Length: 174
Image (cartoon, rainbow, N blue to C red; front, side):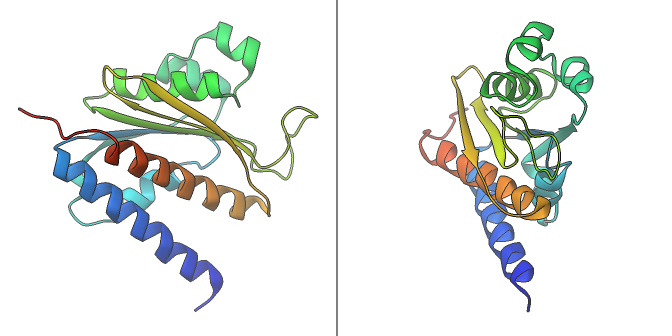
C-alpha cells in the first residue's frame, strides 16, 4: 500500500464520520468547491447511504461561476479575490441558499504550481462552514507539497472542520 492509499483511507474515515454525524442530526449537506474540483463531494458520495445526508455539490472553479452559481458578490471578488475567507464564506452561504441543505462547506485556494502572488502563495486555502440560519465560520490554512498533496490536505481540512462544526452543535429537533 502506498502513502496515497493510506491518505485515502484517512479521508474515507473522516468522510464516514462526517456522514454519520450528519445522519445522526438529520441534516443535509451541500458543498461548494473550487481548487479541489469535486474531490470533497467524491469522498462523501463514495460512502454507501450518502444520499441520506449529502444533498448536492457545486464545483465553481472559475470566478464567474462563483458569482453565477453561488451568488458570491462581484464586490467581494473584486476587493478580496476568489481565494479569500470572504469569498469562501459567500460560497458556503450560497451553497445553502441554492440547495435544500442545512449545512454548507466551501473550499477555495491555490493548489499550484501556478497562480500564486506575494500575498497568496501556493498552498493557501480558504474554507468556510455554515449551519442554516447560523454564523459562518471561515479559516485560512497554508499547506505544502505538490498540487495533489495540497488538494488532498484541503479535502481533509474541510472534512475535519465539518466534523468540528457538527460536534459543537446540538442535534436539530423536529
